[in-house]
Amino acid sequence: MTLELDITPLSSWMPETPYPLLIAGPCSLETEEQALSTARELAKDKRVHVIRGGVWKPRTRPGSFEGIGSIGLEWMKKIKEETGLMVGTEVANAQHAENCLKADIDVLWIGARSTTSPFVVQEIADVLKGSDKVVMVKNPMNPDLSLWMGALERLNTVGLKKLVGIHRGFSPFQETKYRNYPGWKTYIELRRSMPNLPIICDPSHIAGKRELVGEISQKAFDMGFDGLMVESHIDPSCALSDAAQQFTPTDLFKMIDKLVIRKQTIEDAEFGSKLDQLRNRIDILDTELMELLSARSEIVNQIADYKKNNNVMALQIDRWTKMMNNRIDTANKLQLNDTFIKILFQLIHEDSVRQQTEYIDNME
Ligand code: PEP
Ligand code: MN
Image 1 (cartoon, rainbow, N blue to C red):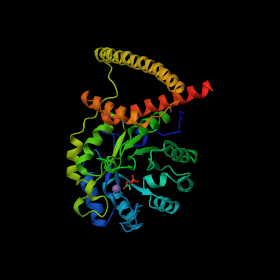
Image 2 (image 1 turned 180 degrees about the horizontal axis):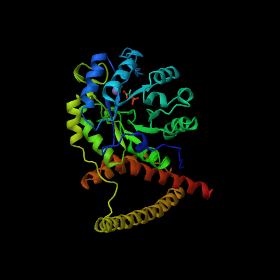
Image 3 (image 1 turned 90 degrees about the vertical axis):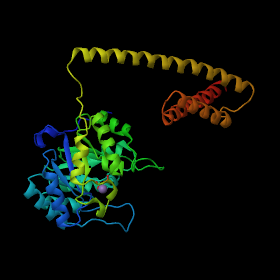
Image 4 (image 1 turned 45 degrees about the vertical axis):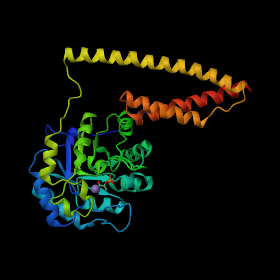
């Protein structure tokens, strides 16, 4: 499904600059001194457009720092006055949104935990109705595209047009390298489903560790994100939240200096024809892959027939385990990513069991 939202393009509210949208600032505003000194350092670099700072922090577990509260909005006003930059914070309920309107905060975002709750999103939308605030929506904790789109639709329906999606990764169900696994597939689906929506990446919450923020940021630019929201603290070692993933402003700029921003495409005949040739080869290989799958499916039918005649079940776990181990060995030899091969063969096998059970049903 493709949905054309009524969107004001990023270029019309983002100050002119050659760099994609860059939002930077502390995870949480902690003291006036910490907020202002971080913002002052960040504002020295013209690539920064918006200073972020959380004042209400919905934490997964109780007992952690839950934000300084509305006083932080006063510090944001000072940041705005002093630096001339836009300022942004997270809102998690209608009261937060009202306070932000009063304090004239420019950018409000709905956090990952709140996007999961349609009533909360609707209450925030109802408060912001009639304003021309920039409203950003982080993906929900779980890779549920409909919840993410639903929140954006609710905001658009009340007339908010300066909308942006923020990809911050998903809560992992097992230990991973990153704090939140990137799940780029869901980002790609959002791009396809809402083609005119600007989408930025939050590499800090994906990475969880500052050493990994650079690689996620580069990946984000390679995948066509419109900008980044990155956490930065004047002294990360004493940050009250997300200490491990925050950069000092100096280190943030060092990381950003290394990023390569690629063009979407280039108007160059030689580049175009080389790319066409490579794409043709991919098209041919994909057709061959499908021909192989079709031949495999023929054999699956023969197996189904054979099992049926001998009164044997369609699913045989032993065979399945052996087959999977063998495929992963082969994947390693061929230098293919073994997680990818595992998922691929799970799908292939699932379809083969479906085919065998349907085959049996049809014969009865
Ligand atoms: C944040 O931006 O500081 C934050 C809490 O993010 P998320 O909602 O992505 O967890
Ligand atoms: Mn944070």
